[in-house]
Length: 449
Length: 175
View (cartoon, rainbow over the protein chains, first blue to last red):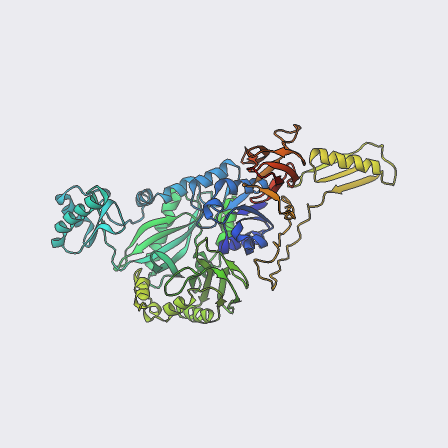
C-alpha cells in the first residue's frame, strides 16, 4: 500500500481524497495556488506545497510544478481528482516516468476515451450500442437516402468540420431529406469552407444515463449501477440520482453486462463512467466514457455503500476487485444537488467570503464541501462549492430528505444555486420522473421575465 | 525528507558522561553531510541528535478561528519534508527574490564548489544566484536587480516551494 499520496487538486474533491487516504492510514500532501493558501485541503493535509500563482494554468495544471512537488515530498502516488490533470494522458505518463503511481486508468485508456471518435469506434467494436450514423461524410444525395433509410428517421445532418449549431439540420420526414441535405451542405461550405456533412440518428427526448465502473489491474471489471444525469443546464450537470427512475431492471442488467464485457475486452482499469443517451423508446446509445472519478460519485456510494475513492487507491496499489471493493448491493435511492457559487437565476458567478454557514444533517444526508464560516471562494476556479446528497429507502423519501436539507443549508456572503434546486424539487414533472436533457433549460428559461 | 544515518562507534567514548567535544564533532559531521537526524551508540553511550524543524507530525490541529480566514496566519501543519522559513521582516529598501518554481535549492553550481553568492556579495541584474533542481533539471535563478546581497533565506539541499523567499537584495537603484 502507498505510504504517501499527493492530491493534485483543490476544493471539495481534494478533501474527499484526503479523507480516503486518512482512512487507509496514508500520509497526504496537498498542493495549492496562492489563492488557496488558507483553503481547507491545505490545512487538513499532512504536508502542503505552494505550486504557483492563482491561475490554474500556472498552478494546478502546471505539470512540472506538480511533479516537482511530488518529488520533493517523496510521494508514492498522485491522485488527480476530477477535472485539471485527471484525463491528461501526458501527465499520467510523466508520473510513470517519474516512478510515481498515477491513481487512475492507464495513459492508453485515458487517450482512447479522450478521443471521442476513437472511443465510439472502439466501444462499438467491443459490443456497446452506439448512435447509428454514417461514419464519415455522406458524399451525395443517393448516399443520403440510403443512409437515412439504414439509420431510420428522424436524423440529424451535421457539418463534418462544424460546430456551434451551424451546418446542422433536423430531418423528420422523407420529404425534408434532400432539401435539408442540400441546405446543410451549402451552409457548411459557407461557414467552414467544406460542404462535407455526416448523418446521425436524432435522439428525441434524450435522457442521460451513465454506468459507474471499476476495474483492477488483473483484468476484472464490475459496474456499480447507473446514475441518471438528465438535469443539465448548457450541458453542465446540475442534479444527479441513482437509480434512474426510468430504467427497467432488464435493460439495466443487459447494458451493465455489455459495459463490463466491453471494458474487460479493452483492458480498462481503475474508476470510470460509461455515458449513454436513452431515446424515447428506451434504447440506450453509448456517447462517451469518462476515464476518471466523477463529481457525482457520491450518489453511487450512498446506494452501494462502496467507497469509490478508497477503491481507486487500493486498485492502483495492485489489489484485486474482491478486496478493493468487496461485496455490495443496491439499497434505496440517492439524489445529489450540485451547489454552485452563482446567482440562482442569472447564473453569474458569485465568489467572495462566507459570512454565515450552517450545514444540514440527519438521516441520509451527506455534504461534500470545502466551505466553512469565513471561507473565501476565489474567483479563479470552477463555481462548484458544495455537493448535497440525500439518500432514502425510495425516491420519494430521498426527495423529501433533500427538501429538508436544502431548507436547512445556510450559506450567506455569496449567492448559491440552492434556490434553483428547491425549484427543481418542487416541479411535478421532476417528482414524477418525467424529464429529459432539455428539462432544466426549459425550466430556467421559464423563470426569466 | 529526513536523511537518517546510524553509526556504531568503537570503544573510545567516556564511560557514563557525555563528551561535549564529541557532540561538537558529531554536529559538525551532521552539517557536513546534510543530515537532519543522527543516532550514535557505542561503549554504553547512546546519543541522538535531531535538528529543529523536523518535528514529529502530530495530528494537525486545525483551528477555524473567529478571525477571518484570510487574515489568520497560515496554520501550516508541520512538514517533515519541508520547513518553510517564516516570512522575513524586510526593510523598505530590500528586494526579496522568491522562488518561481518548486524544487530543491542549491547554493553552488556543484557539490563542494564555491557558492554563487554570499551575504555581502555585489550582484548584477541577470546574475545567477542559485540553482533550483526540478524534475532532474537544473534551473538557474537570476537576480532581477543589481545591488548588495544582504541575506540568503534558503538552505542548501532543502526543498523550496513557489513564492518562497530566497534572497534579500539591497537594490542599488539601477535595474
